[in-house]
Length: 264
Ligand SMILES: NC(=O)C1=CN([C@@H]2O[C@H](COP(=O)(O)OP(=O)(O)OC[C@H]3O[C@@H](n4cnc5c(N)ncnc54)[C@H](O)[C@@H]3O)[C@@H](O)[C@H]2O)C=CC1
Ligand SMILES: O=C(O)[C@@H]1CCC=N1
Image 1 (tube, protein in one colour):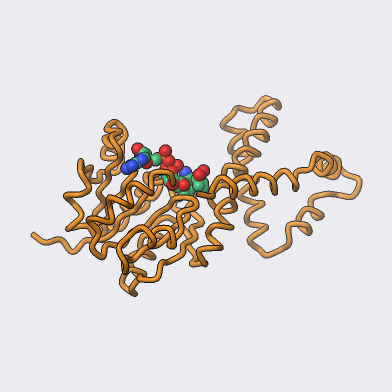
Image 2 (cartoon, rainbow, N blue to C red; image 1 turned 30 degrees about the horizontal axis):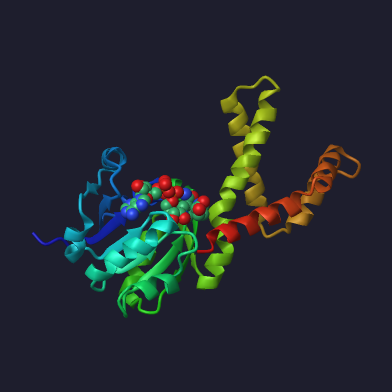
Protein backbone atom coordinates (compact mmCIF):
# COMPACT_ATOMS: atom_id res chain seq x y z
CA UNK A 1 0.00 0.00 0.00
CA UNK A 2 1.39 3.41 -0.95
CA UNK A 3 1.46 5.81 1.99
CA UNK A 4 0.49 9.45 1.59
CA UNK A 5 2.53 10.33 4.63
CA UNK A 6 5.61 12.48 4.22
CA UNK A 7 8.64 10.33 4.86
CA UNK A 8 11.03 12.16 7.20
CA UNK A 9 14.48 10.74 7.79
CA UNK A 10 16.56 11.94 10.75
CA UNK A 11 20.33 11.53 10.46
CA UNK A 12 21.34 11.87 14.11
CA UNK A 13 19.35 10.66 17.10
CA UNK A 14 20.68 12.87 19.88
CA UNK A 15 19.15 15.56 22.04
CA UNK A 16 17.89 17.83 19.29
CA UNK A 17 16.61 15.02 17.09
CA UNK A 18 14.68 13.61 20.05
CA UNK A 19 13.29 17.03 21.02
CA UNK A 20 11.96 17.56 17.49
CA UNK A 21 10.68 13.99 17.11
CA UNK A 22 8.75 14.30 20.37
CA UNK A 23 6.66 17.03 18.73
CA UNK A 24 6.57 15.63 15.22
CA UNK A 25 5.01 12.34 16.29
CA UNK A 26 1.84 14.29 17.07
CA UNK A 27 1.28 14.94 13.37
CA UNK A 28 0.18 11.72 11.71
CA UNK A 29 0.95 13.08 8.26
CA UNK A 30 4.64 12.37 8.90
CA UNK A 31 6.29 8.96 8.96
CA UNK A 32 9.53 9.24 10.93
CA UNK A 33 12.69 7.24 10.30
CA UNK A 34 15.86 7.63 12.35
CA UNK A 35 19.45 6.55 12.05
CA UNK A 36 22.85 7.63 13.36
CA UNK A 37 26.49 6.72 13.02
CA UNK A 38 26.35 3.46 14.92
CA UNK A 39 25.08 4.20 18.43
CA UNK A 40 22.56 1.35 18.48
CA UNK A 41 21.66 1.73 22.14
CA UNK A 42 20.50 5.27 21.49
CA UNK A 43 18.56 4.21 18.39
CA UNK A 44 16.71 1.54 20.39
CA UNK A 45 15.94 4.13 23.06
CA UNK A 46 14.50 6.49 20.43
CA UNK A 47 12.50 3.66 18.89
CA UNK A 48 11.07 2.56 22.23
CA UNK A 49 10.36 6.09 23.45
CA UNK A 50 8.77 7.57 20.33
CA UNK A 51 7.66 4.49 18.42
CA UNK A 52 9.46 5.61 15.26
CA UNK A 53 11.18 3.48 12.64
CA UNK A 54 14.88 2.87 13.12
CA UNK A 55 16.77 2.14 9.93
CA UNK A 56 20.22 0.71 9.38
CA UNK A 57 21.24 2.32 6.13
CA UNK A 58 19.78 5.64 5.02
CA UNK A 59 21.08 5.15 1.49
CA UNK A 60 18.51 2.44 0.82
CA UNK A 61 15.67 4.66 2.06
CA UNK A 62 16.54 7.68 -0.03
CA UNK A 63 14.23 6.93 -2.92
CA UNK A 64 11.17 6.90 -0.69
CA UNK A 65 12.28 9.79 1.52
CA UNK A 66 10.76 13.27 1.17
CA UNK A 67 12.59 15.18 3.90
CA UNK A 68 16.01 14.64 5.48
CA UNK A 69 16.80 16.28 8.81
CA UNK A 70 20.50 16.57 9.60
CA UNK A 71 20.55 16.51 13.40
CA UNK A 72 24.23 15.73 13.78
CA UNK A 73 27.14 17.93 14.85
CA UNK A 74 28.27 20.70 12.46
CA UNK A 75 31.63 18.94 12.03
CA UNK A 76 29.89 15.87 10.59
CA UNK A 77 28.16 17.81 7.82
CA UNK A 78 30.96 17.99 5.30
CA UNK A 79 31.34 14.25 4.87
CA UNK A 80 27.65 13.41 5.12
CA UNK A 81 26.80 16.04 2.50
CA UNK A 82 29.42 14.59 0.20
CA UNK A 83 27.67 11.22 0.44
CA UNK A 84 24.18 12.68 0.28
CA UNK A 85 25.09 14.57 -2.90
CA UNK A 86 25.36 11.23 -4.71
CA UNK A 87 21.89 10.06 -3.71
CA UNK A 88 19.80 13.19 -3.34
CA UNK A 89 17.00 13.74 -5.86
CA UNK A 90 14.86 16.73 -4.91
CA UNK A 91 14.42 15.67 -1.28
CA UNK A 92 14.13 18.63 1.10
CA UNK A 93 17.34 18.77 3.15
CA UNK A 94 17.04 20.49 6.53
CA UNK A 95 19.88 21.03 8.96
CA UNK A 96 19.56 22.12 12.58
CA UNK A 97 23.31 22.56 13.03
CA UNK A 98 24.82 25.76 14.40
CA UNK A 99 26.72 27.63 11.70
CA UNK A 100 25.50 25.50 8.75
CA UNK A 101 23.37 27.85 6.68
CA UNK A 102 21.61 27.27 3.33
CA UNK A 103 24.65 28.60 1.43
CA UNK A 104 26.85 25.90 3.01
CA UNK A 105 24.33 23.18 2.09
CA UNK A 106 23.74 24.42 -1.46
CA UNK A 107 27.45 24.60 -2.14
CA UNK A 108 27.79 20.89 -1.34
CA UNK A 109 24.57 19.50 -2.88
CA UNK A 110 23.47 19.19 -6.51
CA UNK A 111 22.26 22.39 -8.10
CA UNK A 112 18.55 22.91 -7.45
CA UNK A 113 18.36 20.94 -4.19
CA UNK A 114 15.80 22.45 -1.79
CA UNK A 115 17.41 23.19 1.59
CA UNK A 116 16.51 24.96 4.82
CA UNK A 117 18.33 25.86 8.01
CA UNK A 118 16.32 25.48 11.19
CA UNK A 119 17.53 26.68 14.58
CA UNK A 120 15.27 25.30 17.32
CA UNK A 121 15.94 24.92 21.04
CA UNK A 122 15.40 22.05 23.44
CA UNK A 123 12.02 23.43 24.57
CA UNK A 124 10.81 21.63 21.44
CA UNK A 125 10.44 18.72 23.88
CA UNK A 126 7.47 20.50 25.44
CA UNK A 127 6.22 22.16 22.24
CA UNK A 128 7.76 25.50 23.21
CA UNK A 129 10.79 25.90 21.01
CA UNK A 130 11.49 29.39 19.70
CA UNK A 131 12.58 28.32 16.24
CA UNK A 132 14.21 30.46 13.57
CA UNK A 133 14.61 29.30 10.01
CA UNK A 134 16.10 30.43 6.72
CA UNK A 135 15.28 28.88 3.35
CA UNK A 136 17.60 28.08 0.49
CA UNK A 137 16.94 29.24 -3.07
CA UNK A 138 15.08 26.19 -4.35
CA UNK A 139 12.27 25.70 -1.84
CA UNK A 140 8.87 25.37 -3.51
CA UNK A 141 5.56 26.37 -1.90
CA UNK A 142 5.03 22.67 -1.14
CA UNK A 143 8.37 22.43 0.69
CA UNK A 144 7.41 25.55 2.66
CA UNK A 145 4.18 23.90 3.69
CA UNK A 146 5.96 20.73 4.86
CA UNK A 147 8.57 22.71 6.77
CA UNK A 148 6.06 24.88 8.56
CA UNK A 149 3.89 21.88 9.41
CA UNK A 150 6.94 20.34 11.07
CA UNK A 151 7.96 23.48 12.95
CA UNK A 152 4.43 24.04 14.18
CA UNK A 153 4.65 20.79 16.14
CA UNK A 154 7.57 22.02 18.26
CA UNK A 155 6.60 25.58 19.15
CA UNK A 156 6.64 29.01 17.56
CA UNK A 157 8.70 29.73 14.46
CA UNK A 158 9.84 32.70 12.44
CA UNK A 159 11.52 33.03 9.06
CA UNK A 160 14.56 35.29 9.05
CA UNK A 161 17.60 35.69 6.82
CA UNK A 162 20.54 33.30 6.89
CA UNK A 163 22.70 36.04 8.43
CA UNK A 164 20.10 36.58 11.13
CA UNK A 165 20.02 32.88 12.05
CA UNK A 166 23.81 33.08 12.46
CA UNK A 167 23.49 36.17 14.63
CA UNK A 168 20.56 34.91 16.71
CA UNK A 169 21.73 31.32 17.34
CA UNK A 170 23.23 32.20 20.76
CA UNK A 171 20.04 34.08 21.73
CA UNK A 172 17.38 31.49 20.93
CA UNK A 173 19.47 28.33 20.64
CA UNK A 174 22.09 28.67 23.38
CA UNK A 175 20.68 31.17 25.87
CA UNK A 176 18.24 28.67 27.41
CA UNK A 177 21.40 27.15 28.90
CA UNK A 178 22.38 30.55 30.30
CA UNK A 179 18.98 30.82 31.95
CA UNK A 180 19.28 27.28 33.37
CA UNK A 181 22.65 28.24 34.85
CA UNK A 182 21.03 31.18 36.60
CA UNK A 183 18.16 28.95 37.73
CA UNK A 184 20.64 26.45 39.19
CA UNK A 185 22.16 29.13 41.37
CA UNK A 186 18.78 30.48 42.50
CA UNK A 187 17.53 26.97 43.31
CA UNK A 188 20.62 26.23 45.38
CA UNK A 189 20.08 29.41 47.35
CA UNK A 190 16.35 28.69 47.80
CA UNK A 191 17.11 25.25 49.22
CA UNK A 192 19.13 26.87 52.00
CA UNK A 193 15.78 28.08 53.41
CA UNK A 194 14.91 24.46 54.23
CA UNK A 195 12.48 23.77 51.38
CA UNK A 196 13.03 20.72 49.21
CA UNK A 197 14.91 20.83 45.92
CA UNK A 198 11.63 20.18 44.10
CA UNK A 199 9.89 23.05 45.92
CA UNK A 200 12.85 25.29 45.13
CA UNK A 201 12.73 24.34 41.44
CA UNK A 202 8.98 24.96 41.33
CA UNK A 203 9.41 28.41 42.90
CA UNK A 204 12.16 29.40 40.51
CA UNK A 205 10.42 28.12 37.38
CA UNK A 206 7.19 29.83 38.37
CA UNK A 207 9.10 33.08 39.01
CA UNK A 208 10.75 32.79 35.55
CA UNK A 209 7.37 32.13 33.93
CA UNK A 210 5.99 35.29 35.57
CA UNK A 211 9.00 37.34 34.49
CA UNK A 212 8.66 36.02 30.91
CA UNK A 213 4.96 36.92 30.93
CA UNK A 214 5.84 40.48 32.03
CA UNK A 215 8.37 40.78 29.18
CA UNK A 216 5.70 39.54 26.78
CA UNK A 217 3.50 42.53 27.70
CA UNK A 218 6.08 44.59 25.78
CA UNK A 219 7.23 46.59 28.79
CA UNK A 220 10.97 47.30 28.56
CA UNK A 221 13.31 45.21 30.72
CA UNK A 222 14.83 48.38 32.25
CA UNK A 223 11.34 49.58 33.29
CA UNK A 224 10.44 46.16 34.68
CA UNK A 225 13.72 46.13 36.63
CA UNK A 226 12.87 49.55 38.10
CA UNK A 227 9.44 48.30 39.08
CA UNK A 228 10.99 45.52 41.14
CA UNK A 229 13.72 47.60 42.73
CA UNK A 230 12.14 49.74 45.44
CA UNK A 231 14.42 52.79 45.84
CA UNK A 232 16.98 51.99 48.52
CA UNK A 233 15.43 48.54 48.90
CA UNK A 234 16.79 45.01 48.94
CA UNK A 235 16.71 44.37 45.16
CA UNK A 236 18.76 47.54 44.56
CA UNK A 237 21.50 46.07 46.74
CA UNK A 238 21.53 42.89 44.64
CA UNK A 239 21.49 44.79 41.33
CA UNK A 240 24.49 46.83 42.44
CA UNK A 241 26.45 43.61 42.90
CA UNK A 242 25.38 42.34 39.46
CA UNK A 243 26.42 45.64 37.84
CA UNK A 244 29.74 45.79 39.69
CA UNK A 245 30.41 42.17 38.68
CA UNK A 246 29.78 43.01 35.01
CA UNK A 247 26.79 40.75 34.31
CA UNK A 248 26.02 42.59 31.07
CA UNK A 249 29.60 42.37 29.79
CA UNK A 250 29.76 38.72 30.83
CA UNK A 251 26.66 37.87 28.77
CA UNK A 252 27.97 39.80 25.76
CA UNK A 253 31.24 37.87 26.01
CA UNK A 254 29.33 34.58 26.23
CA UNK A 255 27.37 35.49 23.07
CA UNK A 256 30.59 36.45 21.28
CA UNK A 257 32.13 33.10 22.29
CA UNK A 258 29.14 31.25 20.77
CA UNK A 259 29.62 33.18 17.51
CA UNK A 260 33.30 32.38 17.44
CA UNK A 261 32.68 28.65 17.99
CA UNK A 262 29.97 28.57 15.27
CA UNK A 263 32.49 29.62 12.58
CA UNK A 264 33.55 26.76 10.34
N1 LIG B 1 21.09 20.70 21.77
C1 LIG B 1 20.56 21.88 21.41
O1 LIG B 1 20.01 22.64 22.23
C2 LIG B 1 20.60 22.32 19.98
C3 LIG B 1 21.35 21.64 19.04
N2 LIG B 1 21.37 22.08 17.74
C4 LIG B 1 22.16 21.35 16.75
O2 LIG B 1 21.73 20.01 16.72
C5 LIG B 1 22.80 19.17 16.28
C6 LIG B 1 22.89 17.97 17.20
O3 LIG B 1 23.14 18.44 18.50
P1 LIG B 1 22.72 17.58 19.78
O4 LIG B 1 21.48 16.84 19.49
O5 LIG B 1 22.77 18.51 20.93
O6 LIG B 1 23.96 16.57 19.83
P2 LIG B 1 23.99 15.06 20.33
O7 LIG B 1 25.42 14.76 20.57
O8 LIG B 1 23.01 14.86 21.43
O9 LIG B 1 23.49 14.23 19.06
C7 LIG B 1 24.24 14.10 17.89
C8 LIG B 1 23.76 12.89 17.13
O10 LIG B 1 24.40 12.86 15.86
C9 LIG B 1 24.83 11.52 15.60
N3 LIG B 1 25.87 11.58 14.59
C10 LIG B 1 27.12 12.09 14.70
N4 LIG B 1 27.76 11.98 13.52
C11 LIG B 1 26.90 11.38 12.66
C12 LIG B 1 26.97 10.97 11.30
N5 LIG B 1 28.06 11.16 10.59
N6 LIG B 1 25.88 10.38 10.75
C13 LIG B 1 24.75 10.18 11.46
N7 LIG B 1 24.62 10.55 12.75
C14 LIG B 1 25.68 11.15 13.34
C15 LIG B 1 25.23 10.99 16.96
O11 LIG B 1 25.28 9.61 17.01
C16 LIG B 1 24.07 11.55 17.79
O12 LIG B 1 22.94 10.73 17.66
C17 LIG B 1 24.07 20.02 16.29
O13 LIG B 1 24.42 20.31 14.98
C18 LIG B 1 23.67 21.28 17.05
O14 LIG B 1 24.31 22.44 16.54
C19 LIG B 1 20.64 23.15 17.33
C20 LIG B 1 19.89 23.84 18.21
C21 LIG B 1 19.83 23.52 19.60
O1 LIG C 1 25.53 24.10 21.74
C1 LIG C 1 25.31 23.98 20.53
O2 LIG C 1 26.25 23.92 19.71
C2 LIG C 1 23.90 23.92 20.05
C3 LIG C 1 23.57 25.01 19.09
C4 LIG C 1 22.67 25.94 19.81
C5 LIG C 1 22.35 25.24 21.04
N1 LIG C 1 22.98 24.13 21.15
